[in-house]
Length: 193
Image 1 (cartoon, one colour):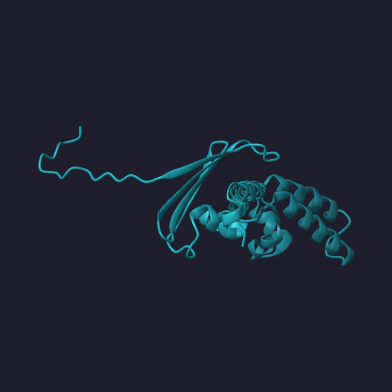
Image 2: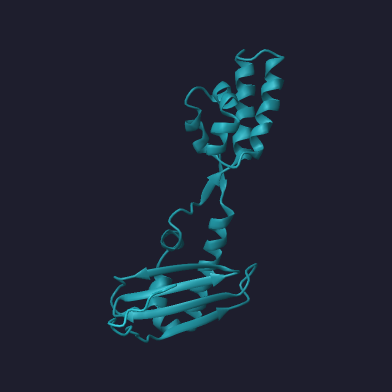
């Protein structure tokens, strides 16, 4: 149960003006809600929401003379994605790509007489088990022995090429581009550089 502090100062409440945009009609995207808040000269915050996910960024050093909407339009999508989600990458681990690389390596070694005619098909079949691997960490527990046999003792270095385009990154990029288009449409004379 919370205790009351009778000597506490009253809470300070400040008001600010927030602009809300609702963007519809973007191809293959649900409606997008955008909240723009100019906090002070050269300081602004934007929140973008689409289909239950939200991304927020604050800039405390925007270029002189630009509001948050104008500033947002001047930035490239990869920079914005870095602000919205520092862990999101354009490419991600792929069990399919890893399995394909393992099969390619087995066939290459077979041609070099690294595997016998009986071993090569067995190794290719074993490599198929890698397709369902969700991450490199999973491989350490589930397929460490197979990975060592296929790629050597430091096999985890070989997984850096086992990547595919990240659909979450592409999705956020499409949202950002739609927001930028809507902001330019909303303030064409101010945003044009």
